Length: 203
Image 1 (cartoon, rainbow, N blue to C red):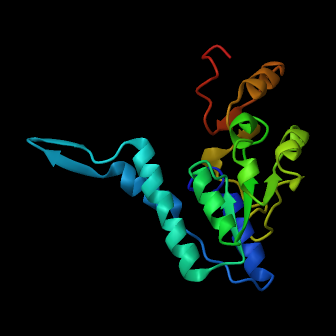
Image 2 (image 1 turned 90 degrees about the horizontal axis):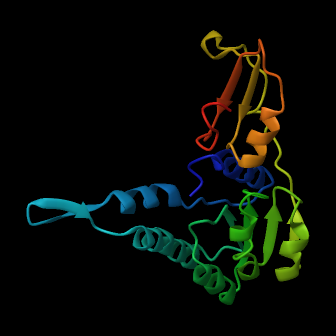
């Protein structure tokens, strides 16, 4: 479900496809994942999770079938697809629905992402580093870089409470931490947005 860092990517594709005259319907996987993950049942005097993580993912993604078989779309595009089982991708293809996966987490998650590549018609990677790896298992794998939407991404007056000399938004992968550690930040006010838990306090 694209209710995190890839929501902006998802929204951009929806906007662009609709602007080109396509009928676009979004399946809100994120809210379903949240619902099934949070569901509790009372057992005796205690409340317990109704479903484990795998069961919650299975139920949340099961609804994709219902929507797809009611609408019978020409193309089903998955943003990220981390919570989409391979059997669902295979099922849609057996029903002659073209499937596309926007692999948004390259190159850091490519060993996980490539496992789904044979189960889709087209793979679009946000980073070309491991493109040949994907092309070995799916010849219709392409590098398709992220873009920007002028109506969303534009310069605005700064919020004084958020001003800094340098700001970077993203996940603190080891390679990024290592890269930033090579910079002399003396006298520079730095703001990092995203998940930087892997960076040690002295970094």
